[in-house]
Length: 594
Image 1 (tube, rainbow, N blue to C red):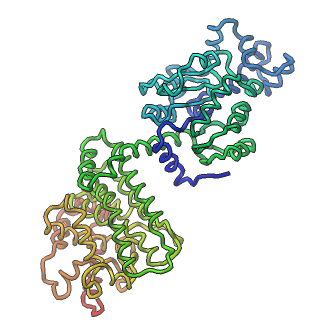
Image 2 (tube, rainbow, N blue to C red; image 1 turned 45 degrees about the vertical axis):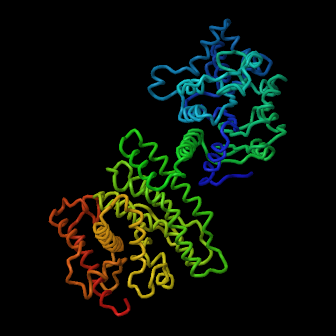
């Protein structure tokens, strides 16, 4: 059985469907309506048998099918059973309506109304991504959801309707209810009724399945013999067949999967599948033009989405897709198992990372700057994604360098948040995302530093004039990168220089705070270019860090940096960390090896 990994399954399907709108059909079974509290056709049949038994004085029967066979001498047939309970069409419809039609109480409890899956499917139909839907369900939840989206489907639910149906090539949506509709007592329900279809229906469905790819959901293939045979007999397979399965498949299902060459989406329920699929396809649709935008235009689009709450979903979808797109490229385009590597190759890889991160860093930085607390999740999710190292084997310097994109994001978004006073956003970026490896999990700040990302050899060979003789070449290099990325947000060069230094100093403090090392001699934290300007021979200069922190300390416990959660919200803890960091900085500044 070919299965798709959970991280990539919906992305693959979304790209397939988005790139070829209208070329995939849906095959939906009872699992799609299960979340709405709709029983299966066979469950209804068994319940009707219990009602017949009750009329004969037998209030409780354990095996309705066997009871019916023993009493009437034949296998249960839905149409015969309903005839025994009601003599007119109106009575028969009334007998069934309570299984499918919601009461006011049902509506209040979200029962027998369209589910997330139904509404997501209807949205995708409206956009033209699906136009053929085959379903074994009798309910009308899908029709309701489609009508809510302004789509009136052509419905084929019997041989009679098939004869008069508009050709599917001329319809917005054709809904084939292959087992019928609950309002028609000719529905196919029992195992015997599901063994065959009319020749006309077989020919019609065969033609559909020859012309379209297929996405199957909520259907096991266990009982529907005739439909199973049609799938097996498909001649043309120009497009893939995807099969979402929830739960453990039966041997019959597994055999069918192999015979039709389906790609299986394991543990994927209908609501999850179609809701997430709709989000991804909507994102791809929104980003048709976004990938062609210059970074300044992408920044303006993000500002527009931030300006009104009604754009919340669009911003979420756009950000998520930009990050997804970048992560896919990071996974595929940056191998670490290369045999030979020159210094120029290493530098070129850094430049390629920088180019790839321009769009996501710019968009995330705008959110960090302008957002007022509604989109912190987007920041942490983005950082978490970029903290992932897709390749675990190869050259160590390249494996470590895979964190460079996250490093770029930390600087650009973190400085943006700091400049605008969004300390909660900055704390979320530095401490909430988690880096995982074979040694365990640590907060982002513990791995996003030059010592972790760059070996000593590469640290001194970074693409910067006179890098081997510089004391903080990576910090100097990042200063250039940040200036290029954040000019649209922070126009004043002097202000940007100062906020850069404050940010790097804060990163050192936060590292020490989270490290919790009590031995002063062993305390370490990342050190930035500010040490060259304000320590050692330049210790008497007024620096922006002192001004920033002195002003904050005056505010006491109400200092926004503390109320955002830094240093456990404690002035004492801040002072303790600052004292340790200052000791480290003085020691490093005086070292002849620095």
